[in-house]
Length: 211
Ligand code: CDP
Ligand code: CDP
Image 1 (tube, helix red, strand yellow):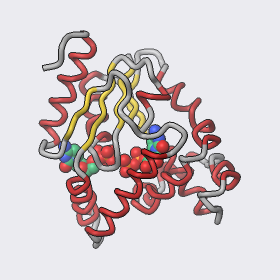
Image 2 (cartoon, rainbow, N blue to C red):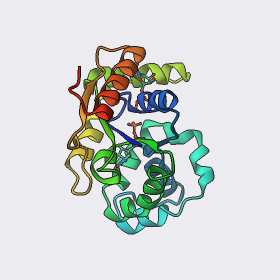
Image 3 (cartoon, helix red, strand yellow):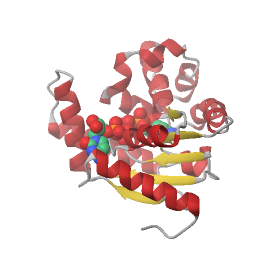
């Protein structure tokens, strides 16, 4: 069984994917971390994320970068979004994601193109979204909780820029996959969003009308 969870930054897709993984007893992969690793690696190598050859060289990252605390920052999210427009970067990361998706027993993956490119035949697909303002507020709260001093206006601008780049790129743009159910978490608590996601997945798995 493969469950695909896609959506824009801070929509809650990671939180929902992990909760679904616990509920269904499946392993979960946050595919954004792979693109973030390429973004951080290009930075550490002094490369330019917009230059294809630099981005491709950065795909050869060591797995220790996946544990780097800087990986979760919005600055690295933005670098990830810039390197991920290159098809060569997407190609370099595809085998790892497909291997994870097709492991025996099944898997849950979250990202931007799971339901469209990585696992178009997934058994269930959810597209998680929320308003830009709510998403920026979530990042604001996360930043404060980590002892930072985030600026709401720049968070909104960063999220909007990333949304636009991710939705308008030529390769694997962010969009709602065929057969995916939309889950708007703007006005939902985490618990309510998770319950709704479970209901949508159960309905898709049973092939019955969603309620
Ligand atoms: O957690 P957040 O939604 O902020 O970002 P992420 O999922 O870690 O992804 C960072 C960036 O990587 C995104 O803005 C996308 O440009 C890119 N990405 C992608 O192109 N395809 C994926 N499957 C996952 C992420
Ligand atoms: O993975 P993605 O970037 O889409 O978002 P996330 O990391 O799952 O969630 C971003 C933040 O929003 C986290 O602090 C979540 O706890 C919070 N969140 C929320 O407040 N309400 C939801 N319904 C879902 C997530």
